[in-house]
Image 1 (cartoon, one colour):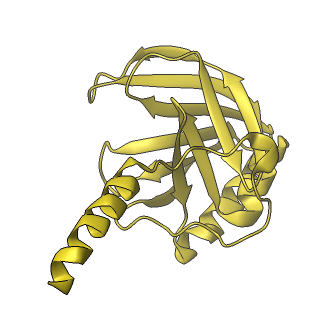
Image 2 (cartoon, one colour):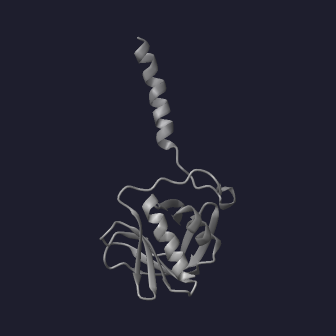
Image 3 (cartoon, rainbow, N blue to C red):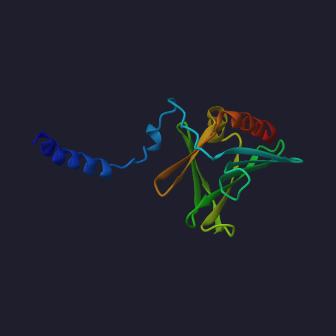
Length: 167
């Protein structure tokens, strides 16, 4: 009999939990300090150097699965951003540890996979990239949904090298 009394409250609590959403916090309320997001298994940051060009990409090793791609010419301080998107967009919205920035972007079909590629220009001195350099993670916002790209410990040296090379 006691078990039957618990079933209805458990169903109600389960229904409420299913309805709960993780709504994004307004930019002003994002915590600058706090625990770092956990790296996602199978995904990481990868550094590739080809002469004066440096590329830092977040995705799956040795695949076309890339979520965010940063490119620079050595010493330029200028970044070219490429972000994967499910649909066409006009901006790349990034956040790291409380710093946020929106970059005007061009959109084109991805070709390699479904969806779009958004491209934009930025600088290594932008606060969001300086915070990313220190913390080892950056998030991309799309349709009020936050996608966190956190480095595994071994990849943090590659992030530092990328920003050192880029200037």
